[in-house]
Length: 124
Image (cartoon, rainbow, N blue to C red; front, side, top):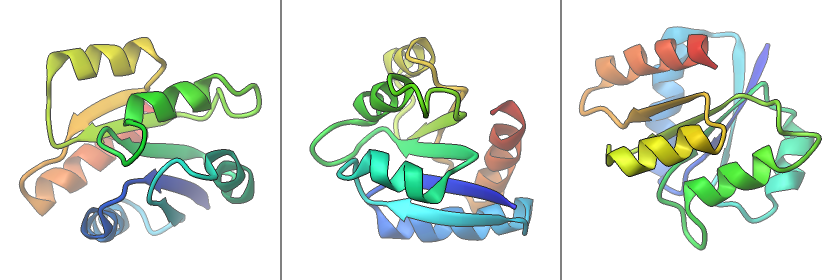
């Protein structure tokens, strides 16, 4: 079973993510974290095999969260996927430069989200 950690403060996005992920695989456990408070504790407790991070988070943005994960010796090898409502090229470039395994724009439809999660799961 895969443990997935989703860092996103939008509860609707978390619910939609879980429903779409269930279309991709039933063999996972999802934990949602609304921000980066207690980030290291959440990773240590959940032991995720993959982390998804929203670019727009309260207090610190997704890139700062990504940097924290990739800068920690125990967590730096966990695949990280970034997602955002915006597809600004500087976001994409910075995410990959900082160690993201994949970046995608939050799709407009459920079927597109399922497709992106399938790709992200293979890319990470």
